[in-house]
Image (cartoon, rainbow, N blue to C red; front, side):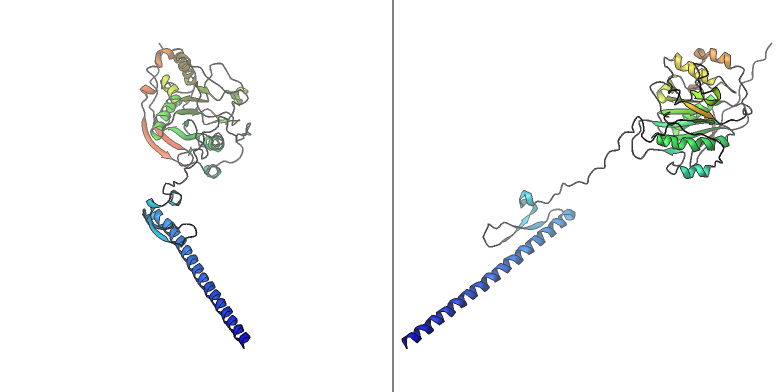
Length: 377
């Protein structure tokens, strides 16, 4: 009987201990899940508050300051009370765009010797399709580098629409490969009076500067096409003569002082020689006068290598009202006496219109008539 009672007592004690263990286990599980849910909630609110601060400034954040193994507690704090590692990054700035590098001295996309021919049919629509990056007025700026100079290309013009199409067809791609920041200006002499190439070039210089801040000027005849794109159309330390080897001269320089066809001067160089003469009416003489102005002002003419400065000329008959000037030889001998009073400082003309086309800017002007020639006695 005693043994039976002892057995039942032990059984009750074991059940009680087991029940206590079960209760303890349940309490621990409840506490565990309660703390877990609070931790999840605090991080949710903390992240939400960080996102809101980006648009509204100072806010409150929930942050866990509880010690290890202690019961979790939440503290309401402002951003200034947070630990440095927990403060939101309010000084973040977007990345600055990468600066555009300067254009290389020798552009990598140059081709070298070019095949120039004038037999295929040419239209301005075709040239425009071939040069979609050229903007209104015949302007272009390289998108991937910064050119050192801004170049105005000036062409004296009258009744040469056929030649202009070929010139634009070849020169726009060449200039773009050379990474030139340029604008093209066609200076059109209205009327049928005697042609004056140098005076038109002075007009082009003046009108181009009204359009943009150019610091380099290339003066080109409309019938001359470069045969090598390494003949870079920009200005140099000395006045530049580009067209040194034309096909009509057997690809040789006709004489040492020749400065015709295509030339280039910086703004400073142009003003130093008082621009070009205005009194050379008809064909010839003005380029020799310009050469004299350069040398008389202590400068020298620079030229490319003869293998690079080659040009093809579009064959044509001599223009009407552009006959050889019989006074040119006397004028050339007097450059020293005339260059200070005859030039950009004495230029007069009447501007009729300026029209911007997709491939060039057309400047139409009236430049007057030549003075009557003296009667020989």
